[in-house]
Amino acid sequence: MKSIAENTINRLIVYKKELGRLLKDSVSNVYSHKLAQLSGFPSHLVRRDLMNVGYYGSPAHGYKVNELEKCISDFLCTPDYVRVILIGVGNLGRAILDYCNQQNPKISIIAAFDSDKNKVNKIYHGIYTFHIGSVQNYIKENDIKVAIITVPGSEAQKIASEIVESGVNGIVNFTPVRLQLPDDVYIENLDMMLGLEKVVYFVDGG
Amino acid sequence: MKSIAENTINRLIVYKKELGRLLKDSVSNVYSHKLAQLSGFPSHLVRRDLMNVGYYGSPAHGYKVNELEKCISDFLCTPDYVRVILIGVGNLGRAILDYCNQQNPKISIIAAFDSDKNKVNKIYHGIYTFHIGSVQNYIKENDIKVAIITVPGSEAQKIASEIVESGVNGIVNFTPVRLQLPDDVYIENLDMMLGLEKVVYFVDGG
DNA sequence: TTTGAATTGTGAAAATAATCACAATGTGAA
DNA sequence: TTCACATTGTGATTATTTTCACAATTCAAA
Ligand SMILES: NC(=O)c1ccc[n+]([C@@H]2O[C@H](COP(=O)([O-])OP(=O)(O)OC[C@H]3O[C@@H](n4cnc5c(N)ncnc54)[C@H](O)[C@@H]3O)[C@@H](O)[C@H]2O)c1
Ligand SMILES: NC(=O)c1ccc[n+]([C@@H]2O[C@H](COP(=O)([O-])OP(=O)(O)OC[C@H]3O[C@@H](n4cnc5c(N)ncnc54)[C@H](O)[C@@H]3O)[C@@H](O)[C@H]2O)c1
Image 1 (cartoon, rainbow over the protein chains, first blue to last red):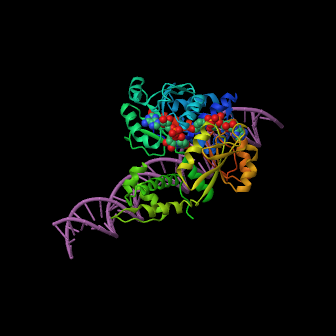
Image 2 (tube, protein in one colour):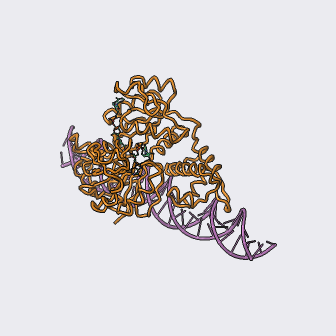
Image 3 (spheres, rainbow over the protein chains, first blue to last red):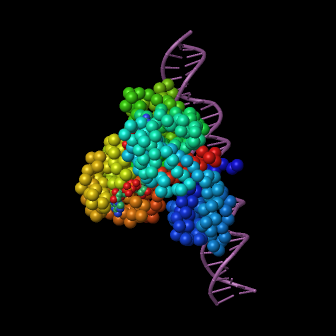
């Protein structure tokens, strides 16, 4: 299997999302430069990326939105239904619980975990909160592979090591801590501060 | 001035953060492979990146933490104090208000804006919330260049256009909407869903 | 002083990514 | 039918990024 650049994957995910939106608006066809405009990448890059997924449009009608969306989904191997857990039901955690289950019906947060007795056994935005002590069992029993970490930075490494030990191998990490984990664990760091610093750099310097 | 790859900038920001942490722990020297371990990038890439900022270490002692931190900061042109505004004091907005001002003393959110009367004129995590109607004046009077957008997706484009018109040219966009703005506006899209999809892809497919 | 071990800095090579440019294709109007 | 037009798909090219590999450097210990 040919390995695809991470940047390409990022862009494909964006195309997929925009195609989903077009689908909702009952748009049936789209040209590369329209997709380019929507996604913010140049049109020749859009076409180059689409070569990877093996879907072919026509010069006259561009791409069929529904087929292309399907094709990208298949390419990304998006399983029909992915179950994810969230750890740390604080300010950020609750915002994510609210947001996430509105967005992609194929990816669901099915449980949350916290150490705070006031939060355990409560339901936030429709998701039940368990005590953190039960997380390792929960992961094993439900074969969870992906977790979102929104605990305080000081707790992050310990929690991450535990859940990886139990079988998780993909983590979305919202804490500012760089997690030290085996190489086969995929970590996506979403530290807002880095994004903000980047904006400051490009606005100020460039 | 040589132009530096965006990836390099990303990494430099990470190095800077890790160096800041080392400084706090009173660590005075660091080797490239230590910085590599902390940041998660290979050590030869660390060294290559550091060539760009023009700081030279010694084979015997590696890099001086304080000097290197200073040097990267200067290179990134991090101004001494950057004032940022946040628009949309919802679940996510409040989480960010709480988080942001704890993190980097050089970058501060100095005001928030919302359209909800119940939120206007209130203080959340120390930040005063103004009515959204006053945002354009506020930007002009205070010469604001960077804004964080955490309003519902349906409002994002309208708000973005307005603030750019008033002088903002850097945006951290937390909504799932791809903003259509002039090319000279730097946009950092932080859509959590994309991060999650990426993790799902790499866990499942790779 | 000399040796050995560890680490830096960097030229060169390799790998990867983005861009260009255009033939091929399909469409609709004349 | 024929022509003009817009758009795709892609080979070739260019640019960028990463990796390799090692000479140069520094220091501590013998
Ligand atoms: N990436 C971002 O944009 C962003 C924004 C805000 C906060 N953050 C980070 O996200 C994390 C959470 O931020 P927050 O504002 O929600 O903080 P918070 O304090 O409101 O929430 C943390 C939650 O984690 C729980 N917790 C603490 N220790 C735990 C443990 N050992 N096991 C399980 N749960 C535990 C707490 O009870 C609390 O509910 C922090 O690391 C913060 O730095 C990131
Ligand atoms: N990137 C992420 O991880 C992430 C997570 C959660 C939510 N989100 C996105 O962030 C945004 C906010 O999410 P939330 O959960 O905080 O939503 P929310 O509804 O809690 O908050 C939205 C806030 O914006 C205010 N608002 C609405 N219209 C406005 C306007 N015209 N001007 C000013 N303020 C206005 C509302 O009064 C409210 O306070 C949404 O677009 C959501 O999709 C992103």
